[in-house]
Image (tube, helix red, strand yellow):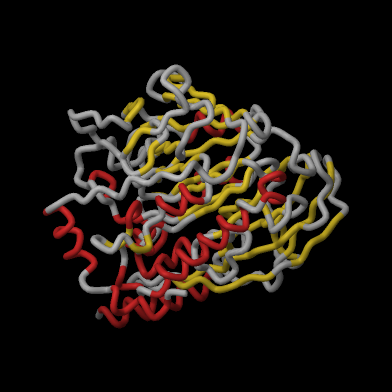
Length: 463
C-alpha cells in the first residue's frame, strides 16, 4: 500500500511539471575593488544561464554573465538548489544602479537597486554592525531596513550567526532567512563572517550562500577596503570545531599576521589608517554564561593554553588594530582600550583619544529565538558600558583621525543608548607593552582538556 501511494505521488509530481525558476534570496557584497559588486541569488531548478541586467539610474542597458553551482544540503532530504553569482565590474562611483537577476529563458527578478561608494580613500563610510540575527524574533531587522531605505548606510557587517539555523528543516529556515534579509542585503553590501550556528556540515550553508571578496576558496576569512578603512573578517569558529581540521587554524593565523603586516606598512596605513577586525566570538565579555570570552585566558585571546600560541591579541596589539567588533553574546558591551586584561586608556579624561590598545565592541543583540544573555554581577575593570537591549551598532568614520560609534536600542524605539568618538592622531603599532600574560591557574587546565595535546600535530605547519 505505502509503495503504491509513493508511486502515485511521484507520478502526480512529475505530471504537474512544477519547476521553480524564480530568483530568490538576492544579496550583494563588495567585490575585489570598490568599483565591483558581487551579486548572488538562488533558484530551486537550473535556469540554464546566470545573468544580471543593470544600469545607472533606471536604465537597463548593461549585461553581466556569471556562473552557478549546485548546492546540496546535507540534511536527510538532500534538498538541492542553484546558487548564482555575477560580478559587476567598472561601476561608476557615487552612482545609483538598478538591476534585475535571472536568466535569458526563464525571466528575471523584481527590480533591485544599490548605490556605489565614492572613489578613493578620502570619504566617510557609514555602516550598521550586528550579529546573532535569527529567522524567529529578528527584532532589529525592521528598523535596520527603514534605516537603509533612508540612505543611512553604505554597508552592513553581519558578525556571525544567521537564521538559527540555516540548516534547519533541510535548509528551509536558511532559505526563509535569506528572503527576510533581501530588502536589506540586496541594497547594501552585506559583509559577513561565520558564527557557531553555521557549523553544521562543515559550515556548508554559510560557504555556499555567501560569496565574499578574496574568499573564492571558502576559507571563511578575507579582507576588503572601504575608504579610509581596512576591514579584516575572521573565522573564530575554526578554533572551536576541531573536527573539521587543525591545519585551517594555523593557516588563518599565518594569513592574519601577513594581512596585518601588510596593512601596517606606512604606504598602506596612509591610505587606510583605520584597521578594523570583525569575528564572531569575543576575546573578552562579562556575561554569565561560561562562554570562552568569560575565561581568564580565552582561546581567541591567547590561543593554546600554557604555550600562548596562535592567540590573536598580541597580533592585534603588535600591528595596531584600532577597533575589534564581535558578537556571539546576545548583548552589547563596550570596553575600555585593553590589552592583556589591562586598561590602557589614552588618558583619564579622554580614554578614547589616542588609546594605547585596541577598542573592543560586542554587538550580538540584533534578535533571535535564544533571547538575551545575562551579565555577570561582577563588572570587570575593562568593561565600560553594557546593555541587554535588542539593537545594533552604527559607525561612521569621518576621516583618518575621527571615528564615531553609537548603539541603537530597538527596545527603546530606536533611542541611542551609548556613543563614543575614537580619536587617533597616529595609527600603527602600540607602544611596547612588557607585562607578561597573566596565568589563570586551574582554569587553564579546563581549557587544555578541550584542546588536548594538539601542539605536536600543528607545529609542522608553522613557519
